[in-house]
Length: 244
Ligand code: UDP
Image (cartoon, rainbow, N blue to C red; front, top):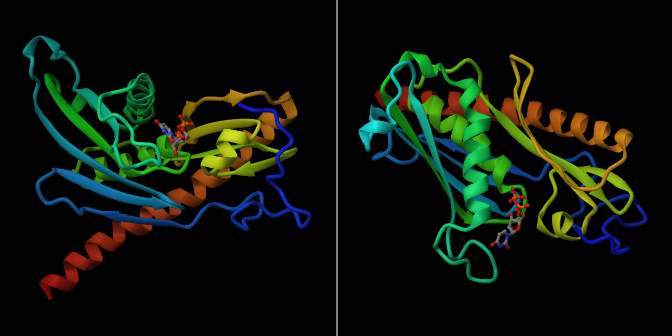
């Protein structure tokens, strides 16, 4: 995280893309777009374009990984080689392994894992285009893909980051703000249970700034949750229209 004095907020208090500090990027969500997966969702958040696909519950291979009292959740976060300006190697990087783990841990508390002992669910996240905040957008899409697959869930999971650029706490950082800003705090929330399932921080914040960033991120999660519900409902409105 660079501490350079780059001007990321202009005199009017607006950001490089014209957003106010507490504004989300434009978000578009679609549910059920892959017919070969058990559940799927697609999200665009600013320039991010991300697909999430679910397979399962199904028998675990290799068998020794199966648990007698609950299902296992497996997650693969992957960035396409063309998803960033400098070609990304298709081989799994350390960052992708970490993100696969934190995305899995953010989703697990929302699933009734004990309903399907000795089975597994695979969550595949493919980042087609990345512009900062992909772990959060991936969680938002993967939670919807799980719901689309009909997996019994305690709640949806909505995720969003907040952070500090120049001296301002801002919501939903894009790549430039993430790279030359001062801090980034990704948060995932189960909105009805009011429980946080992901909380990370990259950079340095005072205690007051940290609290402000977390609260702003939680507000962002609640706005995204409203969009998730609309996207889920939209799928069933479409199904009804086709049937009529
Ligand atoms: N990024 C990149 N090349 C890479 C990995 C990441 O250009 O190999 C960019 C990408 O736009 C990503 C951003 O760096 O969204 C921030 O990455 P970070 O590790 O903070 O995760 P994210 O913010 O996407 O959850």
